[in-house]
Length: 79
Image (cartoon, rainbow, N blue to C red; front, side, top):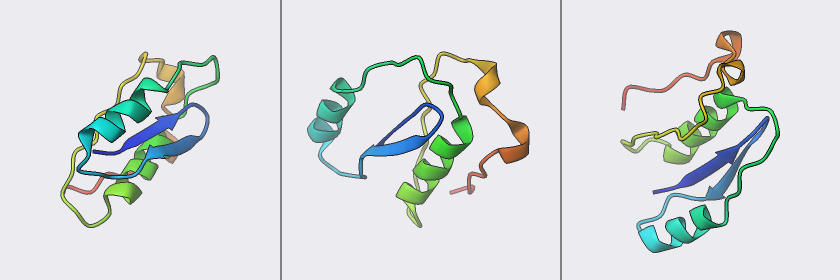
């Protein structure tokens, strides 16, 4: 597991780890903010964090459509 938090910019809050408890502890420290949302940076950060490994990206969001800008959409490899 790993954790990327984002608003208008993405930040790796916890790098990929087999220690689920450690990642969960990092998640507990996340608080929602009022900043604008940009999904592409968060997805790109997650793809980079996964690297050549097979992985899954799960996005937890308030579904604000304005955060998705198709012209700068991040690509996700099939793996």
